[in-house]
Length: 314
Image (cartoon, rainbow, N blue to C red; front, side):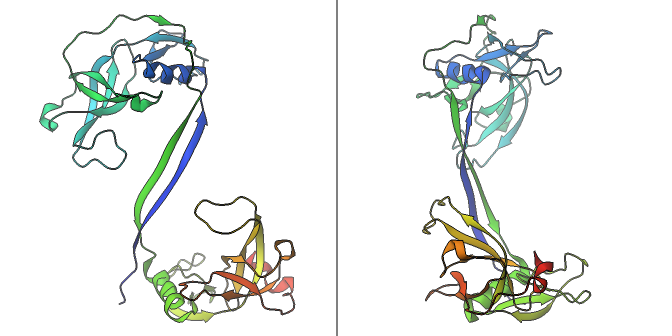
């Protein structure tokens, strides 16, 4: 059996959000080496603070100081830190209930090894040298044996408050397309052919193949060559330029039913003004010299396909 393909992939994007008055005060206070909680009507102190009581849904706004020391309520050892984590040496993930708080804060604990960590141990905040008004202003926790601090009310007012944050989201993983799509990719790359698989029960041909029929639930293995031409079934006009994609906007991205296939695949439409693309347009693939898959699809010059010939593929 041919080797199944696999490749490392990364999905990342910046997530930008605004802050309400409670969380704005919390992050701005961290910049000043202060931790704030919020009081509920029944006297609980929540850290990190939230704007609404998760039990009663009451709106919350009464901010109070809590301690810079606390108690570990539970923990897990991390022997191999990953990119972007708080420490680059092995550490413990801990839930710490800061003194005078009733809920726990998740962060890292700098400890020499798992034997040095236990539930109930006392810890204190280690501040980052440069603080910007983010949870990373707390560099980590470290072991401590001091007593807690006195609770003080805080007005929640600051000069130059933090009003928004940007969180960089990233996922690193290894993707494998499986046996069926490996054959599909290799046929495109090596022979410039589109190869699908036929369901032995309903006889539908799926491109790209999935290894099983999504309707009948049975395995597929019979290969069927389709295309290369096809029909535009639906499409959209893209007006926002994507990062790292060298295509001028506006352009058209479409679902294309290749001849002989019972599932539409997607591709970019070129060689025609974007406002002339339409359902039923007959198209063919265009390859670059070293392309592993079609760069885009262009009109074949044939008459448009009748709606009845592709309506089941919308």
